[in-house]
Amino acid sequence: MADHPDLPLRVLPRLTPANRPFWTGGAEGELRFPRCADCRCFVHPPSPRCPQCLGKALRPEAVSGRGHVLTFTWNHKEWIPGQGVPYAIAIVELDDQPGLRLMSEVVRCTPETLRIGMPVRVVFEDRGEVHVPLFEPADA
Ligand SMILES: [Zn+2]
Image 1 (cartoon, rainbow, N blue to C red):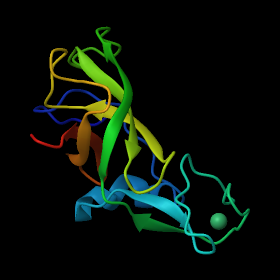
Image 2 (cartoon, rainbow, N blue to C red):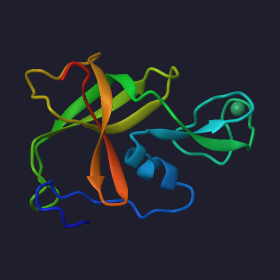
Image 3 (tube, rainbow, N blue to C red):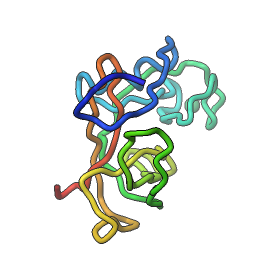
């Protein structure tokens, strides 16, 4: 956890060579996933091989950051003191590739406004070196 008094508490990842492009891409406003150099498939969750062609030449590459809410739930349990509840946990499917999905949070919405199918775009929560990818309504 990092000390950011204006932000809700959040468990942050330990950076590794493999996950660094994903967690730090937000510094340049980019949501990055490994992409297969052979068949151009974005790979998430991370894997040492492309699930489409079994290629091993995976390189981080930015996606558009646009997608839609595939499903969501509102969490009301404060798992970490000071976490801030409720918050919306969602699976977002990105426009860049069918089936390319990311579990994250949707911010700047309420239980009255968040809907399945809602267009969203990525926003980044700056936690120092780590930039946590979140989503907001595309019309926000
Ligand atoms: Zn491939």
